[in-house]
Length: 121
Image (tube, rainbow, N blue to C red; front, side, top):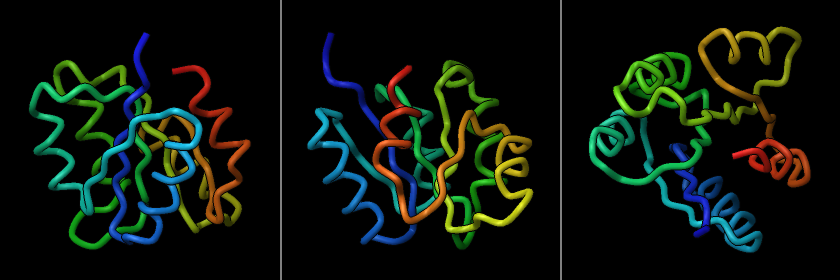
């Protein structure tokens, strides 16, 4: 079985860089989009995606808006989508899950928790 392909959707290049470096070191194949509209366009193609890490707070379209659109796409319904957010207040996790996220991780990223989330894909 080949490397698992992770799509990272985040408007901050530093977050993308850190996630890619961390995941590549753990043998994941990562690629990224700097916004939800770009990611939705990519997901309309036949690009292989095994899981998605999406920042919940982005300009133009946030994760709360994007996740239901991703989950509604033909052929993409079963891709695990994990919310990645700096919002770690009471209720934020539930809000992400209600939007359709399959899991939630807060920033700064706990690498062990992230690997646990991705371990089942």
